[in-house]
Image (cartoon, rainbow, N blue to C red; front, side, top):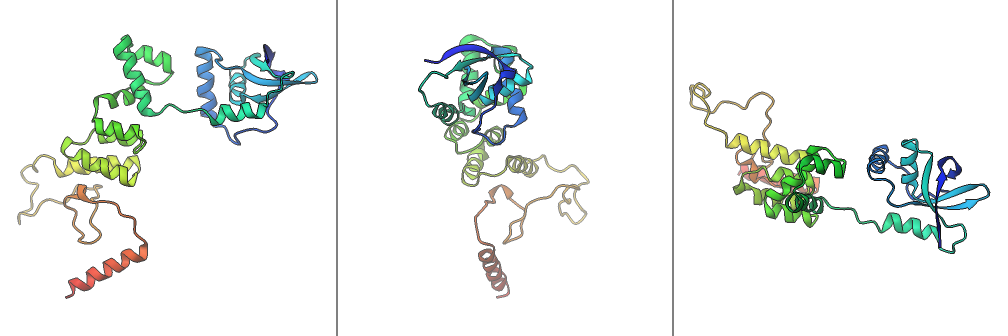
Length: 261
């Protein structure tokens, strides 16, 4: 059985074989903040080599303690144990199941409803910002079909938050587009902005030309046009299709020939 002890940080050597080639600084900062608030939940794994210790599992926790300028770290010493330490390292890194955004939303919602937690308490528990928490809580009051799509990993968090801002009569259509095409989140916001333009209030007096034609789009506003008919109307019905460039050119040339009769 391993022996649990506190070891001076400067006596520990980093792993000979690291699981990760790069560890983001922001992750170590986040982990250090969590250890500062909640302590080290899972000790690192080491073996004694002469008068020093070799680190086998817990590299990130070790780096977080360095960041916190801690002198000691809790460790399990496997020097006299027959367990395969590489198996422990692999298990810690590979068998971990990250909490999804949908599950996090459910968890935060339960804390609010079952335990009456307020936003400050949620911030203290998670170490996250109010905006981070509210983004996930908003999913619980949004469209259930959007939430289910997120829960089933068909869309991302940014898609779900954006889709919940769409008018109800268009949301299902745009949800289907997001599932089928996985667009960048910024594009979902662009769709919403253009949809608002299409359904904005009637133009004020003076915004129509003498000939009765609608005024041009405001400077900087770019409307998508259909590649085939070149129209910009009803752009929320435009879909993204995967086509080879040469196949698309064949279609365009055929349409051009048809226009010529």
